[in-house]
Amino acid sequence: MNILIMGPAGAGKGTMSERIIAEYDIPHISTGDMLRENVRNETELGLEAKAYMEAGKLVPDELINAMVEKRLQESDCEKGYLLDGFPRTLVQAEEFAKIADRINKPIQAVVALEVGIEALEQRITGRRICPKCGAIYHMQSHPPKVEGTCDECGSEIIQRKDDTLEQLQVRMAEYEKSTKPVIEFYETQGLVHHIDASKTQSEVFALVKEALGKVA
Ligand SMILES: [Zn+2]
Image (cartoon, rainbow, N blue to C red):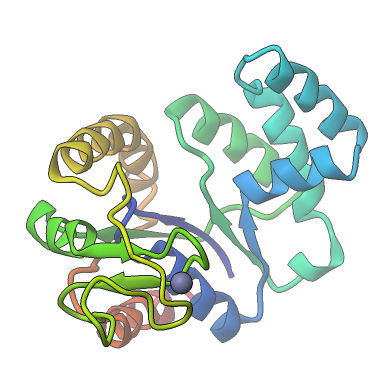
């Protein structure tokens, strides 16, 4: 199945992506990772992208499109793909629709993870990380054994600077503003499955599976 996953930071997109690709035996195509990989491997497209990045400019849509088009034609995409982080804008969505049609791999389902700001606030403002080993904790759902101290390495755990309510509100507003036209674009094609992502991971995955089960 050809799936696009969308959701604000903190909605559990990473975990859900892992479960979806395992269930459907499809690759997780994160455009961020794909871009970095192309740059690292110095592919033709990667080198072109690197020039923009080094000049402090955004990598143009055409380049990302070309990378995605190439990626989707690799053999591991035979059963489908899970696209993540793209299309991000209406222009990208329209352009991608043309590409996907051309290579006969149109998006069949859009999984839109939705979570209210209250639930996100709890998830994000309770999060603590260990700056030394990268371990992640949560004050309510996964606290360290000794308060303020990393279980793994004993370092003092900290709150990331952007894990605050103010930053969350800014990010949510930006996310909603930029994704709304994209969601609407797919909505008119009847592809969007709105998933309540405020529940537990297993419950959310059950909802995703139920929604995707109706697609095939
Ligand atoms: Zn640690």
